[in-house]
Image 1 (cartoon, rainbow, N blue to C red):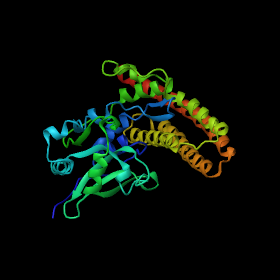
Image 2 (image 1 turned 30 degrees about the horizontal axis):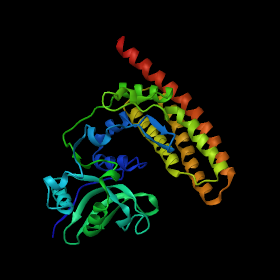
Image 3 (image 1 turned 135 degrees about the vertical axis):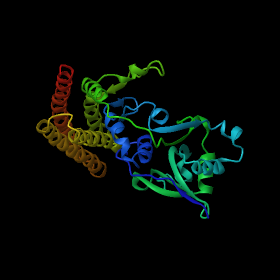
Image 4 (image 1 turned 60 degrees about the vertical axis):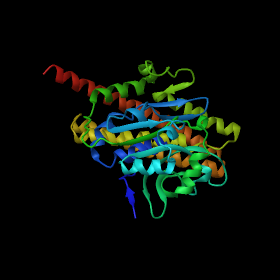
Length: 343
């Protein structure tokens, strides 16, 4: 009997699969923390489809702590004619985790099972040859990110029923940790990230040599608060269902900010008295973000406009609190850097 389970750890960010899957691998060793705390600062909001996320371009392909490979769906049969199941087993045998798009209509733990054809990214981190199952992670029961299993047969059907034009990843991604890799906490990058977040800077302009910048209809940084308010206000008119994912991203962002401050306090990047003040404010903002997420869930059950009004009020509150303390933190970091230069 062959049973292989590659190590995973429940990730600190679970807004979208690309973050949750990558961090499931990285967080099995705390050496990822300096990289994590150096990033996950900027947010973007796309107005045409009302989606918000962390701005982390090329996460699948260029994380410095991972070996990555990608293979197109159409090219796989050319280089590996034995089929998708044997391919996945052999990748796991070589220590590779896999992300690929499947039709969740065929995945029993998925909410779409036998109800709706839905191409979606799934994460595979092991298999049991005797039981003929793969170990997977995705947004499964209650749409919470969790670990489960699926039969070889179901996975084969789920993969086979996705057409190449519906494969939004455009590839099968393989990745594993670089065991000896090191990434030092990048204070300059954090300072730049804070400034860009506060100013609502379009960070995609920095990568225009690789991809066209995302400009019209894309909102960045603290400007997302106005868009979240407009979205919430639209629910009072359209009598729609509130997309919880927007507010879960907001919570994940505040959680990441609090975690970063704690790390910076432990490593003495700012005087303890100042940092404890910032941490207290950040913790309260994180708490308010939890309440906002709860309120949108309550609205989806009750339809009460009072819930929406409370959300808008709390968005105004945390926007003001966050801007004030992040400006102060940025000034503290900048002043400390100047002191170091003049020593």
